[in-house]
Amino acid sequence: MDGDRMRRRDFVAGGALAAGALAAGAGRSQTGAPGNAAPSQGKPPAAAAILNYNPNMEYRRLGKTGLMVSAVSLGGHWKRIEIEIGKDKAPARYSDSDTSYPAIPGFLESRARALDHCAEVGINYIDAMAGPEVAAYGQLLKGKREKFYFGYAWWQKETRIAQYRSADRLLQALDENLQSTGLGYVDVWRLALPENMVADPAENQKVEESTIEALSKAKQAGKARFTGVSTHNRDWLKGLIERYPKEIEVVLFPYTAGSREMPTDSLFDAIRKNDVGAFGIKPFADNALFTGTGAPNDPHRADDDRRARLALRNILANPAITAPIPGLITVQQIDNAVQAIRERRELDLHEKAELENATREMWARLNPGHEWLRDWECV
Image (cartoon, rainbow, N blue to C red; front, side, top):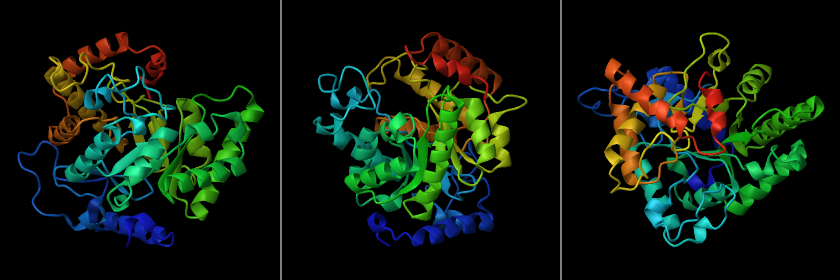
């Protein structure tokens, strides 16, 4: 099967293959136990259904989609890309509406290098949130569709913008975007809802209804294999999962190094009950977790690498999270994330204290405009 020209009738077969992996014993995750001295030898029986299978990676079931997804996946944002392409070339401030990146010398090469290394180490899911990200990764995925699941949102043409609050407009935009990028289809359309509920109840209902209708029709037409939503409003997201369990198969929401599950009335109650796949965005709180710049020669690199691993281990200790999706920039950052997978999952008392201290510093230096992340301490 040609990965770039996957026939839409093959979607059902692909889903059945993933479900078969579960029946064969894949369960919630598939890997050697985290922290083992040596990785598992050879492929387990279910590995045939896992893209980019690598015994050093853990794979988790993406809810009722049945897809087995790498426990650390690749987020679309390329913040701090200047450490790869140079400060003199990168825009002074990252914007997910900036379409100039592909024209910057070295940018596409940098992202291609990251994708190739992700494939080598077993990462098999890429998430894109905005037009420039979809366009860039759509170009780079040509010839590589069989290696990655692609999660798609183009918030500039979704319900955050009032003119796209009808199913017809959403589907028209999806068609245009799939054609312009050459993607043809996406594995997950995780439509970007407004960050918070719309104040007018009637308008908010319009957002919900148009979203669900568009997702359902896109799946029926074979343009999206699976569907879901993202938003920054915890209560709204929980209600959406409960009201639309068929269409909402995957959700994305903030889950940082400082997040934890609420003892009662948690979002995770709805996620577990409805078997929804869950990706955690902003695991490093917009890089506020780190003291350094992320550059390879930064004096804080070793400490920041350790903080990243502690955060990823802590997040993955919650089995209801399918994967955090940090915007990894360099090969070294990708390798550091994989190292976190292989380390002991549960933090000991010293590590917990270390992460708590790092988290206090993280909250204190949140970047302007990201203070809302504090609303996601308890999920």
